[in-house]
Length: 486
Image (cartoon, rainbow, N blue to C red):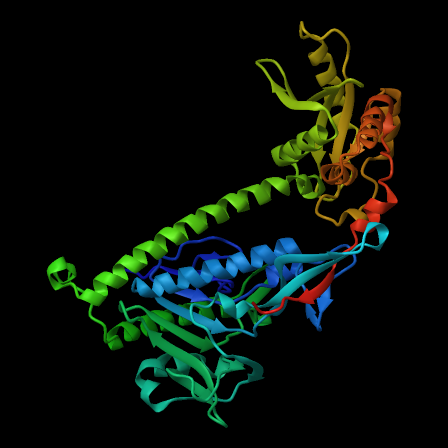
């Protein structure tokens, strides 16, 4: 039966095997061979603010959101890789250059008051290697001259003969590192490790890195990149060697899987019984902690829903708009019956309004959506319980994949002039986010009333009032400080 193989954190250039992003929550128990590359670049890229990356001690400091996600991803893979090896799987790690950043610990200090208030955010180092199932003292360096250790030549010679010359080491380990299988050619510093599981015939093999993105692996065809013949040949040879390596690792495993009968109570040892009870208690505590973590993660996702105003489209954008409108003091919901469907119907003492939402990847919102909004207003008025026309608002998230402060105008000129003539309002959802973000943290009733009046009374592009200076000052990034060891 063919081996089931998956790669994590990288792709084979031919796309011949399934792959999973480092940010995914994939289970590894369905796979026979797991290929892994520790890689937190995704969280680094998504951590910069509008003013660029934040640094501390010369390293990038992740923002709070990406700190949480990066640490969660590392914990997930550390757990999954360990469980995979313990369940008889073969895990092969390519040791790329480690990413080391500072991640928020979740604790902050506040000093001063008012405009002199200063927030200090505590951070601690986070390495991409913390995703590995063993703790390593790795020193980042680079080189390509390596040698197999004598007692590992039977195991690794086929793979190393094919890919040794293409491999590069990005880290070295202390000279007393156990289970070292490859060293630097000069100085004999360990650069690769092979370990077997104590409870199964699973194996963990840490190998020097390979370049899976060489230029020769890609051909440009009609402005699109496709895998080249060199990529296909490389991938096929790589998979063949990996499968052969997995077979050799299983042959050399000294652990015989325990027969079912050997696990019966009649063969249990006293220490084993005690430790088993300890494990049950630990698992119960872990289950409780995991439940609390999942609840906190759910609440965190709900708390951050307003950010969908900045980049979403479709139903997620509609849900974020409704949440923002409720924060402004409206009663807001979508509406659907046999004849009509409206993205948002919202009302307050200031008036009743009907909204239509539109998100565009890299274009402004055009006049077409105004026609849809006008039609919705007439359909709404035909309902028996509606006595006067609702004020129409078009919510637009134009250029949604671009930073808000780098976007062009949200609405076309024709859309703006038509909205004025039709007595409709235009709202940029990043602008809606600005005022909802403020009101979600400050109970400012007068400001909320002013925003509601702007929606009800303004035709054309709506400009909301500025948030108070004190609030703007409070949004400045906190200082960063290394967390003191407990």
